[in-house]
Amino acid sequence: MTGETHIPLNDDVREAAAAWHMRMQSDGATGEDWTALTIWLEESPQHRAAFDEIDLLADEIAINASEILAGVTRPSAEIVPFPARKPPPQRKAERPPAAAIAAAAAAVFVAVGFGGWQASGGPVQTFQTGRGETRAITLADGSRINLDAASRMTVRLGWFSRQVTMSEGEATFDVARNPKKPFEIAVGDQRVRVIGTEFNIRHYDGSTDVTVRRGIVAIYQSSLGDTPVARLTKGMALNHVDGSPASMVRAVNPDRAFAWTEGRIICDSQPLAELIPYLNRRYGVSIRLAPYLASRRFSGVLELGDEKDVVRRLADYLSIRLSGSEREYSLS
Amino acid sequence: MAAYLERREELIRYFRARLRSPEAAQDIVQDIYLKIARRPAEEITNPAAYLYRLGSNLMLDHIKRERRVQRRASAWREATVDTESGIQFADEDPAADRTVAARERLRLIIETVNEMPPAVREAFRLHKLEGLSHAETAAAMGVSRSSVEKYIMASLQRIVKKVGR
Image (cartoon, rainbow over all chains, first blue to last red; front, side, top):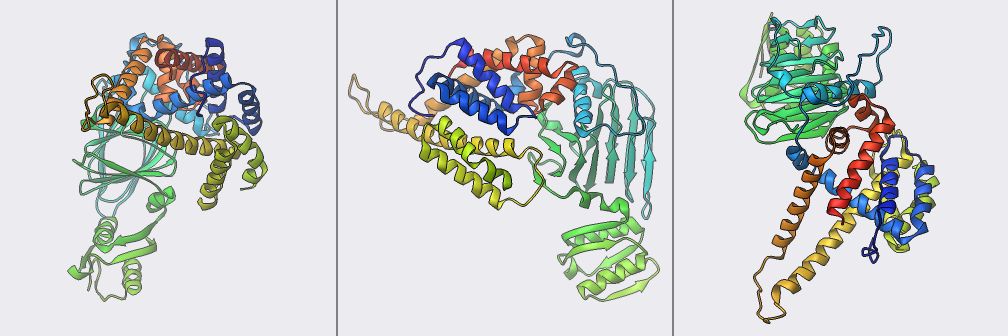
């Protein structure tokens, strides 16, 4: 890419380079396509220079995407120039492929923009679980929510959007696609906007974890406006502490975050100070923990069967003393 | 790894054309090998595309690093000696100029995007800024994939003409 930077380029060469760039960006670019591009590049210095130009420009755009996005004015919902897409006929038996789900939900950005959040009616439903109680909910739109113990949320299925407000708690969401109604969850000081479908949210003590198992989820920070702070795809998790300007995204095995819905939890060096409050909520019991044990960590799979067994197994594993019975235990 | 071994020669050939240097191409392809050797085995849907993209990212990083070094050197020469007066400005910050130029380019890009026809702008926004694939962008806009490709090509050409290189 050096030594040929001052070759003059005409529109034809630039157009051809842009076409090559497009082709290589498409999902179905094959090894043969790359070989064909190689041959084209070898043909002339103009080709190489023009391809460098478009490649570096695309990179510059990618690096500065959020800044450019902030400066780009968006056509308002009323003047969107595209033909409205008719929702495809509902096929009950088969699930649409992930890409189609993502794409359909992305349509929401175009059609509704961000006005949808405010402009909606519909009754507010409150779902709540007590300690020792979990609940599976199917909403009127077909979305499914698993609510873990001691959790609370309100749901409003409005005309233009589906809104959930989640306070303390944990839940998994399997959101029915509806390009006309975005699904948005307010949790802590963030908003989670669904572009695809299946994810888990955990919100305790001002800390939020979002883990995606299928599809795409966009996260917005109230204080940072309408540009998503993160776009999570399958196998990504975001952690955010309320009030903090930053969020942390990492790659995870998403099944771990969903394990609680199948009656087990998977711990990876989890401090007892977090694990015990979880068990207290989940079983509606009271397990007291000697202060010196708060920082002890547990790694492994905990089958959430009978409460006594769980507590005993944990005590055995960590070689600590268990006393008490019938919903009142202490570990020391 | 099988895909790498199978495409190794083709990869070298591609990066030789891009970099105009057989040695640099060898280096990049070696770096690709190191990257994939370290990476846990996992299913990749389009291994050939993955290898080229990995190499392209390595190449771009390398080029950007080199340009920074070059720019710093030349900016330094320009900043330290004003050729007409011969006065030295040793404490001038060469990086400041660079930042101003980059910001100006960014401003021009944003301006160009805002001047695009709505459909072109929307395709550009969804694909290049929001990170949707061509197929997802097409579905989101309710148009065909070939239309999306046409829009995105048009958007890139507008920007290339405005900011050039």
